[in-house]
Amino acid sequence: MAQASGQGGTHDPAFEKINLEQWLAERHQARFHLVGWVARAELAFHQRLMSRVEIELDGRDWATRRGDGKLTIFIQITDHDGMRYQNHGSIELSQLGDDIKTTILDYSQRAFFLPGDYRLAIAILDTATGEHSTRQMPFGVDPPQHELLTDAWSDLPPVEFISPREIA
Image (cartoon, rainbow, N blue to C red; front, side):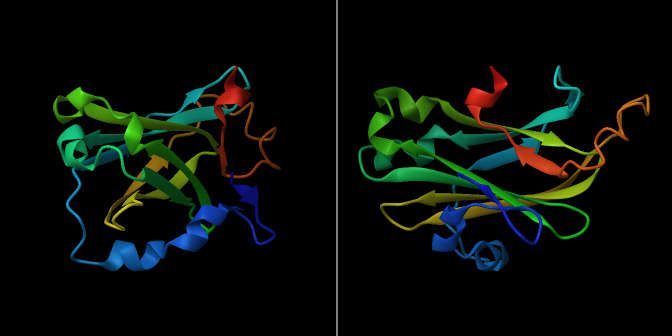
């Protein structure tokens, strides 16, 4: 679970087990087929801009890995001030079905955002082998069409990951 950092952003202790910056700079990584993006933010009933980090993984990459370890997904969002917001999730490889070869694994993480420019970094780790793959890309969150809420957001963090329990 991610926790607030005294220096801004949120720090997920799971990131201490990896070196994301080194992984992002590597040329030779496992070639897991990975697609990731951030959906367009919409005003939620919380009166905040909410979006999803969407990740798709090709099941063919995981068919031979069924049963051993976990597939861990690391998500880091960096704001325009360089503050990092981290979260992770995992999928037990023993839970993958026989038909995994013909499917796409979908992983989604919801978050609240303030309008602005960001950078998304995604890392995928096979815990049994240590193989990993990364992607990173810039994205932006547009402000709402009306400015009524921006003052109400003045003390909120630029990024706040949402647990599934908080959505209900």
